[in-house]
Structure formats: C-alpha cells, structure tokens
Image (cartoon, rainbow, N blue to C red; front, side, top):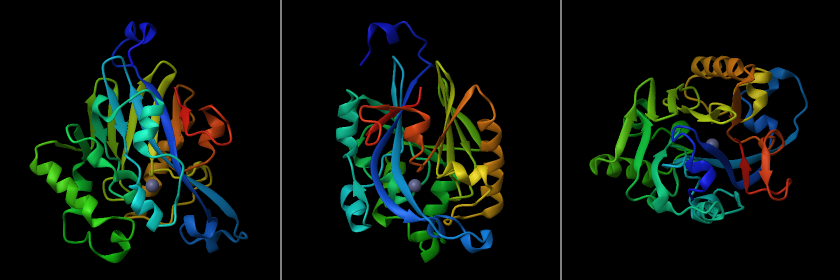
Length: 272
Ligand SMILES: [Zn+2]
C-alpha cells in the first residue's frame, strides 16, 4: 500500500479513513440521557457504526474493530460490510495492521479483535481495569458488553500484547491517545496527524455532533461530569480550523467528510 507519493511523506503523517460497517434507526429519546428534560417531541435518528484506519507509509493503525457479525445480528444491527472486507476494500489485510487501538470495550468497538492475532492492542488502563474488575458485571454497565470479548482482553494481556494508556500518551509517531472517560470509565479519544491538520477521532466520547453543539449527554454513561468535560474539550477542538472532529456514530460524518464512492451509501469516508 506504499505508493510513490506517500513514500515521500513523513511516516508520522497519516491518511485517515472512517469505515461505515453498520447502521440502524433509533430515536432521540433512546440516544439522549433523560431526553424529556428538553421538552421536545421525540424524533427518529439514524445511528451509523464506524471504525477508523490511520495509514502512513510505515504503518497501519486500526482504531476499534467494530462488532462481531453474530453479535450485531443478535442485537438487531444492520451489517453493511464485514470489517475484514472493509480492510480489503482499502487494499489492506489484517496482517498489515501493527497496532489496534480499542477506544472502549463496548461490543461495537471491540468485536473482531481475533482478526489481529499479532498486533499490539492499546487501551486505557482505566478501561481495562474496570472491565476486569468487580463492577463490570452489573447490568447497567454490562448490557453493551460481551463478556467473551472483555475476557479476550485479559488473554491479550497474558500474551503481553496489551499496552495500557495513562491519561495522555503518544502511542505511535503522530498519534496520541487521550483518556476522557464519561461514556465508559476509560473512553479514549485518538488524535492523528494528517496533511490537513489533526484528525480527532472522538469515538463514543461524541456519538453525535449534537452532543457538544447542544450540550446533550448520551444515554449510556459511566460518569456524567467526565462526559460534559469531554464535550467541552471536543467543542474547543471543533472551533479550531486546524483540527477535524470525527464523531463516533453520527451519519453526518458522511456529509462533513469525503465519502469514497456513493455519497448516500458509502462504506468508507476519507477524513484526511
Ligand atoms: Zn459505539
């Protein structure tokens, strides 16, 4: 995947893609915390499912791995593209991937880790400790999680392939991970250097742009104060023209960035 143009470039500058691998229809009252307090009628909203790829001349980093097909089907999600097929569409194979960042341990971000048996897996220390700790099985925390998938994190830890991020760390040249919490105890935001500025992959620190634009917390959360604080940080980032804020589940990503192929139905979007 190293073409002559990218080979001339700095290895700490990446092309970044969002892969849209699934979708569903839901409602505002389901996605926003205590939606009734806004005094607005309910409305239908789409929810897209993404993972992200950062590709430099030297390396390929995958940020999240989507949901496993059987889990997505069981949970009623529409699958648009298997993650391995999505990689192939971009000319990549799992063997090209040296590093996988898990932004948090929910089923739609951590399935398919088995595709990358040799990659370094990066996750926030707080996230790993929470999901291997005593409160992980309480229903409100456990509902968006597959126990077999969080158990796999422990296997990866035993294999010595798990890297735990503290508060803010450079995890590769040009790639920084910031622990913001809020949605889950150790939700990560990933910042990637590109030719067009810094791509800020908010993942589920920001499911929808409306969350920071209208200060509306998402319905699933571990800590509301941390969630609001993350919105403040992401709002500041959004106002900086040198940075590209990418929400985690918002169908608007297809409009704000450049879809590859059919604009309404794209399976991948070029962020930078
Ligand atoms: Zn998610």
